[in-house]
Length: 168
Image (tube, one colour):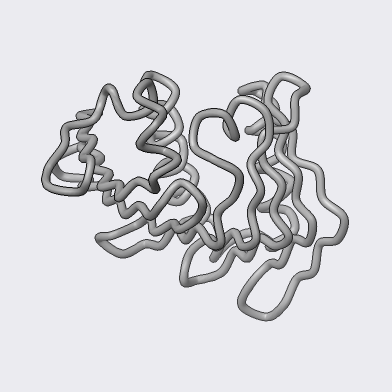
């Protein structure tokens, strides 16, 4: 669960940095800045193509490595005023073992519900409350993920959903 806590905190921090600096930096420079920051945490971002448009930055065929091992591959990443959207995602290595093979779409937005994701793991929604300094994640797991009791052990079951709350 510690990895999930760090991931959620990192995602919320990344979203905040992206939205604020998006207005002041060239978009490709923003991506290069994110690459440098990720390297500090042993995360490597590789991509095939980077295209800057008027209101967004599109990254094609993104691969994410943690400590040299590939963990995520996404056909596209779009960073714009509406947030960050990853599409056609396949999970590799330890991430695949933990949550499943793939996700159709993961959207991080500057709205109260900042995370929406669907995939082979089921579906998830999350929010980050700045004033309360808390992160909340609601997961509706797939049948496959329900078999992985380790992944769900730190979450509280509410009906057919699992809830994870974390104070920063």
